[in-house]
Image (cartoon, rainbow, N blue to C red; front, top):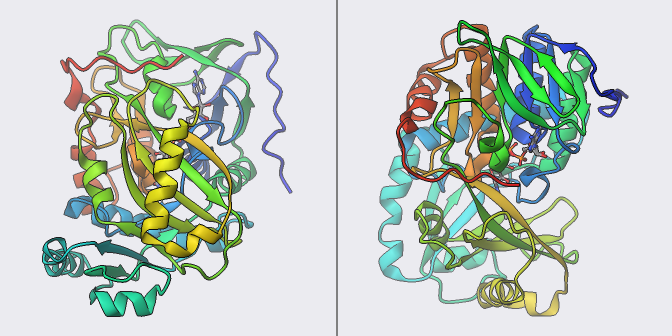
Length: 409
Ligand SMILES: Cc1cc2nc3c(=O)[nH]c(=O)nc-3n(C[C@H](O)[C@H](O)[C@H](O)COP(=O)(O)OP(=O)(O)OC[C@H]3O[C@@H](n4cnc5c(N)ncnc54)[C@H](O)[C@@H]3O)c2cc1C
């Protein structure tokens, strides 16, 4: 098996490549693999190790039905198809399951909007149905009685993010990608013509005509000269992991309020807690989740832990007999319009952004890799949906934006 740890980078080493991918999370790993398979000479530069950032501290849901607009639905569907394909191509570890997911409504008023949601999903070719409270209990008997109904989306899927990062990187390395662990990118290097010529790192200058910034919440920390700083802020989320409780739930279940919390721009430090439970391959449950702005803190606030557990037990009473075995916090790379920042910078040719995915980096990593590969190779975006994404995710939409950059030290 190819080791992803094979490269030791000596200080002052002379490194050059066609493309430098900065960041070894799910986005950087997917981009590095896609570009390597397309024949590019790729070097991946990561300050720590694989999945050391948000991708090692998150759920692995890839849910079509929680998306707010048609573009999000179509992109996530495309990502799920990619993950299914990758499951066959990669040598294990992806943890891909397509068990579907349920988003439930606690009161009839919320439930009344479900047929419209389902019609929208059907229009995009998604397999989903509206079920009433009785049918919901038949499908997930551990949910508390009295819920109004749910949308059961059969196309929804999940992966194991750290396993996915490792599997993608192994395959990237197999296709010639070099990996530089423990190397911190500091500054973009440009030539007199304004084009990218590489990156200054704490181990010396690495040369390349293309640099992809996939550093998640840390991406504003790359000094890109006079460019307006990226308006990305870390939005913390806490997860609680239970001991194995096989069969308690069969698929990811989410309260409808989760979607509203994800969309809300956030008002500073007040945390929002909404119930989501994801069964892992071994039967442990990941219970979440919270959203709050508190800088780059990844400590778990005891009150938040208690609030997440109490909310989960309220919807899944059987959890009262299941022990929590650990909890952790991760950081979502938030942007002011809740859309990622993907594509080539208009101001610095050769500088490509692949960041700002907030709570959808796992779900959107495959399509992000396609978009970045097209941008680097100078090809049109493959397909109408990706073409629309290039517009919606364009890096230059924030030029002149006043939001303070969320640099994380
Ligand atoms: C509680 C929680 C639950 C979530 N659930 C889901 C979910 O179910 N589905 C979903 O799609 N998303 C989910 N997310 C969001 C998801 O975790 C992120 O969108 C995703 O991990 C971002 O991936 P990334 O590769 O962009 O960033 P990261 O994984 O953070 O990778 C960035 C990498 O850059 C490295 N780096 C930093 N600085 C430098 C530097 N100077 N030089 C080189 N490298 C550097 C870091 O070490 C890090 O490894 C969740 C997030 C949280 C917090």
